Amino acid sequence: MLIAVRDQLGEPRRVESLPDDPDGQLTLKTLAKALDLIGRITGNDGGSLGLHPAVYFYGPTGRHSSALFMGTVALVGQKLANNDKNFFNRFTSVRADLERVLIDHKDVVATILQRTSSAGRVARYMMMLGKLIEALGAAQAVGEIELVQFAGLEGKILTGTSDTAQLSFSQDVKSAAFIQTALLGAMKCPICSGYLDPEKSISYDHIVRAREGGTGSIRNIQLTHPYCNQSVKS
Ligand SMILES: [Zn+2]
Image (cartoon, rainbow, N blue to C red; front, side, top):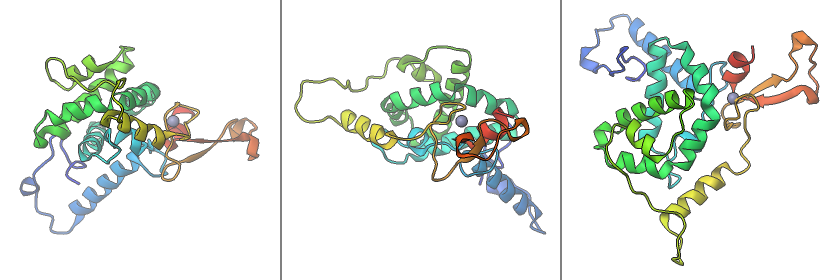
């Protein structure tokens, strides 16, 4: 909730600093903002990016990471607060590349967050994700070194290598297997090539638009992100 009412610098406001709300109007406004923000992350509303949790919110061990979740929500919340409508188009245009980087480097991101005090993790991840999206938008190649830079850390971060002669499975190998399995068979959006989360977020799109003669036939339907159907295509 505090993320939804953060000011334009992206700093969440403290509850004590918020004005009194005698008739409840402010509370209603805050709830509406929070709902608007949640509706951008998941759900079937037209602006929903429908972020796949395994890509955006799971750490390398396949567990939900509150730093990844809150950092992502904070970034989207900041763009909404700044009324930065271009952000959503930029995000969508680099989405396939972004998801590949996030999936391939979950262990690097986890290590970056481990090197950060728990109080600073959300801000750190928010900054890294924002810079990553900008870099991909500028067609910059992004690997481990760039991710460490985007997070504002110096030096090299060593993560385990996946090829090994040891007989037992390392944690990294188990992690990679989990993420691979979680996304195995996951559908992709034909408009942006990002992963779909069909249980929570889906839009039924006319391949040929109705106004251009497209019918409601099974041959003319495709499943897309709600945002892609509403904003990218039209
Ligand atoms: Zn899409």
